[in-house]
Image (cartoon, rainbow, N blue to C red; front, side, top):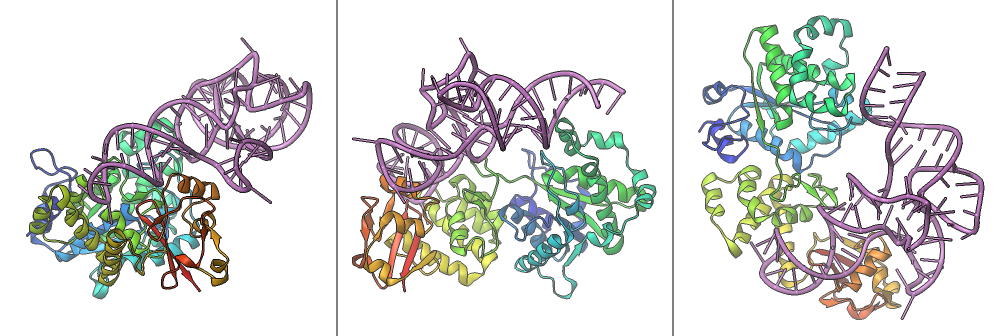
Length: 414
RNA sequence: GGAGAGAUGCCCGAGUCGGCCAAAGGGGGUAGACUGUAAAUCUAUCGGCACAGCCUUCGGAGGUUCAAAUCCUCCUCUCUCCA
């Protein structure tokens, strides 16, 4: 099956209501993807040391391409990261130092290896700092700048939107730099396809245009829809912040819980986008309604966690989730704090213990939690903020605290 | 450089003849009810603490006053228009 159709079917490419693909610069790319092995790239920001769920769609896109035998290039914006892409932003982004970019890149590469196979040149990772930082301004203007019409640039959405709020010349140049990236990859790696988020459309088109002018060759672009949840929130945002893919930032258990709790309306879409399950399987799961949809959510959570954190971690997360929500017990992957035995022997106020466990940012917050009846020790509701927690509550050297329905913390007595 | 506008709690955003303002309203968060670890809805709550009281908040620093987010002075930053 042509990857193009796979991507289309799984929802990576937006379609009109009649099913024809949108956001593809030239439908010829479909035939090319079906008959040749090509090289395609997506650019990533090195602004953070870890990716989050919002980047996942791009990563999966590359993974699918690789599975179909194409060669993905991960372009890290070490050079452009020092400028900051104005697309889709309302304000100028903070700039990074080269050291920060390098450090982030190292970590990002590690993350990529879970989704993409970089062995034997099956995929490449490049840093545009390698060619951007050494650019000579005059030369660049003469060779590249002359191909760009300012009038034309001003009509691009990503620039136009910023005209209202203003953008600096530095940001204005971003489009040239990204176009130059594409040209560079085209020349050096025969990369003919650039993909990216919806907001990259303008930048991608201008890259294609540049390749046409300089090389007189065709290149292509595909963008995927900006992903929002059914409630309209940006994908991968949680109350606590981004849903990071790094296990140190978001534990596999929390990661699993995120997917386990997605809105009913999102389950079908997410199964197609964020798992490698067969579309037949996905279609079957999509039929699940009402209570049964929870089975589909479990599968989504398990598969998504497996891809990001490995099968073992996914199994653990699943088991512990079932335990916590079924039997009200805590498994090993539930967050844990330690406390010394003497403290418990003398008894400790419930509010103090919840605060120590991080189940409230302040004592006042804990107080409100307890007053609203949302705090539990083991399976008992905490009835007073100064309820003494002592050895009576210790089971197997452990006390299980719960805030609300979903937040467990184990207190281990040492 | 010249002329204006503005800076309020997590975000948006009211609030200026000075007190009743820890500050309307919305978003969002949290908890409870309902449920399916969903959505919608309803209820409570969302600065801190030794919590029926006290302390620290309305860009920053001073000042006027019994009393200031609200008045005065200076400073910082942002935006719009003109050159």
